[in-house]
Image 1 (cartoon, one colour):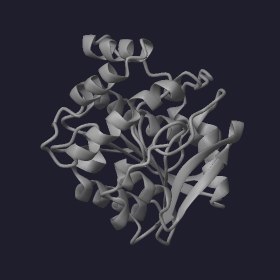
Image 2 (tube, helix red, strand yellow):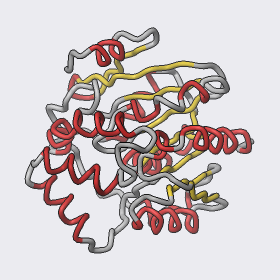
Image 3 (cartoon, one colour):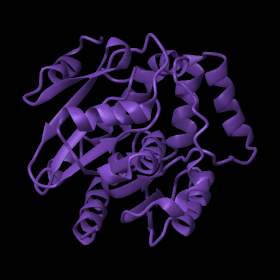
Length: 274
């Protein structure tokens, strides 16, 4: 566990919790605000700091829970196989959330989709941000092939460099740049360790999109990798009554690049869900 001042503050915050999960693991989680609950799920190689700039506004209207996924941020590294869907169920159960809206980015979007298909009664609304999806086949792309190779070769430094160039192309001088860089560099090695233990259960959400019966908003940044826009369109076309939104001047790290516009879109969607 990292011991710099920022991480100590996160670990000792006023409403920080350690959610028990399988294999004796613990997930760092934070809860704030009041109202109908929203759970925030970050992407691969990130942590819950992804939401730093939007949580204050969301918490003015909702109970907000965010957490570090298994082996990332301050959560403990896995020592055995684990499943992100089961970890999310553990978070909802820990906070006694019979039902919650889920907002997931990238890997967090994939987990949110899979969870909604497995536990539809626990989900009130979906917000899928630059989301991946189980069962989706990405077209061949030399850049993404290099990214996959860095993961396969356990090259943490190369992975961090590619993460910045592919998924954060707006660069370090754009809004959120320094925090994005810190998250990527902090989590690159941890991510590689964690991914070795992730169990692939062969889920295929893209074949079951018609079964999603909750209000769904699909958001993508206009500066993200083109494959994200293709998948976003597939999600909008496949999920009944889903609404799509393209957000200008935002890449994959959308909640840090455009926090005000993102919070406005999320809150408007949650207000419409009834």
